[in-house]
Amino acid sequence: MKKLLLLTLVLFTLTSTAQLRKIEGAWSHEKTEYVTAFFYSKGEIKNIEYIGPDKLIWKIVNKGRKFITTTIRNEKNGHKVVAKYELNEDDTLTVTFIGDYKGVLNYTRYNE
Image 1 (cartoon, rainbow, N blue to C red):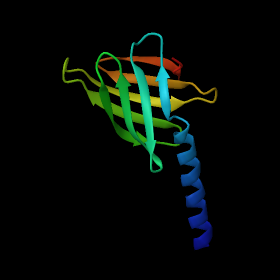
Image 2 (image 1 turned 60 degrees about the vertical axis):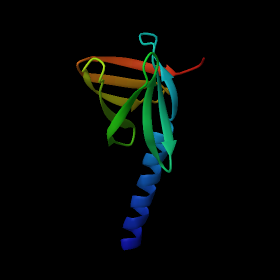
Image 3 (image 1 turned 90 degrees about the vertical axis):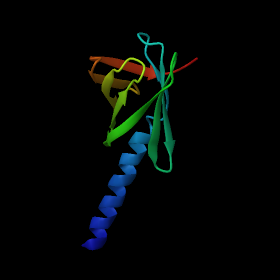
Image 4 (image 1 turned 135 degrees about the vertical axis):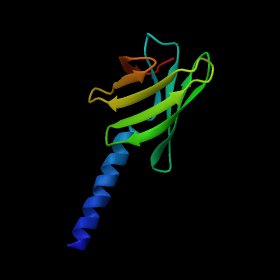
């Protein structure tokens, strides 16, 4: 019974990791001049950066099977924002922003 429980936990962890791995890469939306980049290392998303006029690094506060929640405080303008990134079946990323900016954007993979 213990082995079955351990096997179930290992398979769940591998499935969750595989889903988050799909988020890795660069994403963009036509309404923003920033490109969002997810960096994956040692089995997890380690870093999220917005690359544009300013480089913004978001802090990861929660991760699920198909989502990542982040937060940031922009020192230049004092804005605080929470963003939830959800991977969709069609390989798009829905981003819900809450805080000093509120909105929902659907990102696609960045192609220069």
